[in-house]
Image 1 (cartoon, rainbow, N blue to C red):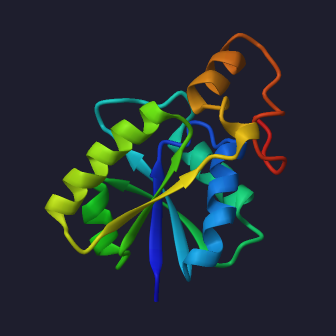
Image 2 (image 1 turned 90 degrees about the horizontal axis):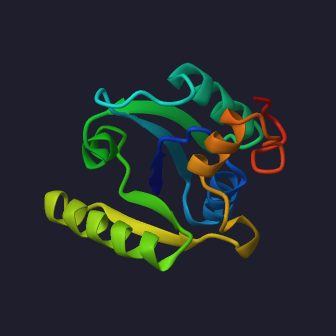
Length: 151
């Protein structure tokens, strides 16, 4: 069984995240969308809220589950029997950063491959950081997040 982890903070989940998961579905038997919890940082939105939004977003996809984890993503992959990590790439800067992380992950656990998917052009400008900033200042973010959730 081909199991992939799509890790992130999803603070909040965006249309770009939704697109990556849905486009990755034909490649894997199961995708686990996983919020990495960092004890050093607190998110803008509560972890419970983000988990709920992800569950709502992917409720129509039985092969997608939602989890949270602490520690290294590769350790979580091993725990979940996942051999793949999915990452979305918006820009060349994303590629440079994600390539470095993927190479370190390969050194740590050679059996886990990172699969990069390019973000669709219409979602390239959407980042969780920008969505948070718009939200913080009272702007309408509905055009950037999945329809199933309301913030």
